[in-house]
Length: 146
Image: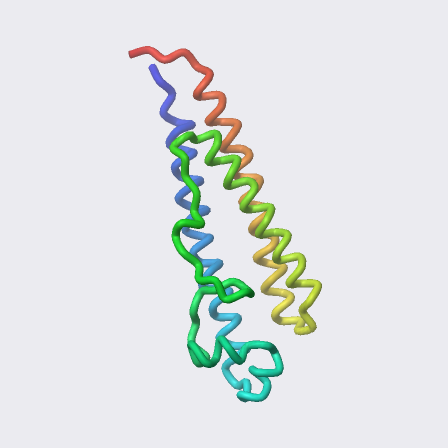
């Protein structure tokens, strides 16, 4: 009989990490909101956010540092579980690196603590994706009986 356990475990890991990544977006949004909450227009302009303010005031709008909006197309899926898990592994490493660089730029201990937490979670996600990849590869190698 086809071993469904590894497949179900993989689905569970993907669901859990995907849910947590959405929570990370909320954490980052809250962090930005709190940092801008009491900021004067002069401070916003001095921080290089004048253009952002002109377009969005202090509201949250998902853009990268160059102002390019986040879109769902950034989430890659090929339909090949091995390729997709490798993509996920790479995305976790990229996120970890970005958090490292943000930590290096931060002079606020509270912000740094949040960034460290997020960085640590990316490391855990990388580990879980690696474990899931091993399970999926094992499952794909097994002889299928129909």
